[in-house]
Length: 206
Image 1 (cartoon, rainbow, N blue to C red):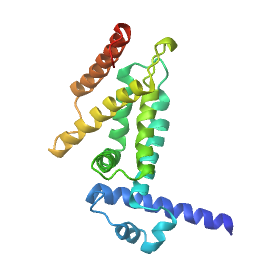
Image 2 (tube, one colour; image 1 turned 90 degrees about the vertical axis):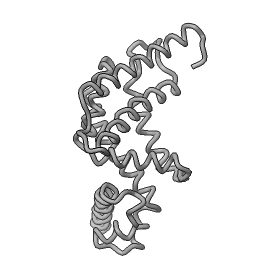
Image 3 (tube, one colour; image 1 turned 135 degrees about the vertical axis):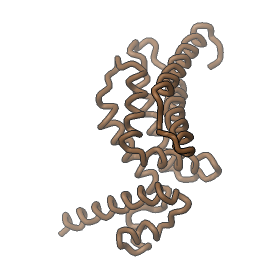
Image 4 (cartoon, rainbow, N blue to C red; image 1 turned 180 degrees about the horizontal axis):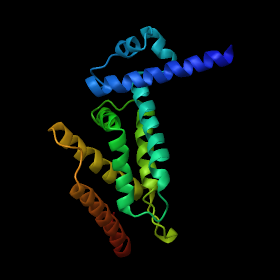
């Protein structure tokens, strides 16, 4: 009986997450009420809190799911010698195959940067996304490892460039991306790395 209850609870939790993906994509985070999510899975509103303590925590769990997909289905094909082009292509492919995460990531970022960043779980999830990207930016030469701040800065440039660019294009009705934009993002990252190296060599502040 305990095993059956746990399976049922797991299935209900997944149903709530899937309902939230659809509703957040169609109505936006602010336009979706908790009762909208629970009604979609035929659950009483109060039962929501058996699974998540807030709508923000639910969004954090969706971001964490996206990170798992990014790692398992895309980054797993990379190795330490993979060029920047491959890393950017993997991140773009993640959004191509799972476009709902473009909206979810942008909504989470908006919540955390407009005076509503009080949910530590959501901030932790977005930080983990950047750290996962940053871990793939480490140079193969161990003596040239970036500092944590440098890696996060580069990861923010990559993720922000890809998601921001695509959001603007989609907002005005264009396709998600073009080959020239992909190359521009790679060139921007490469230039940033060169600048970090130059500042290290000259002792200039980063």
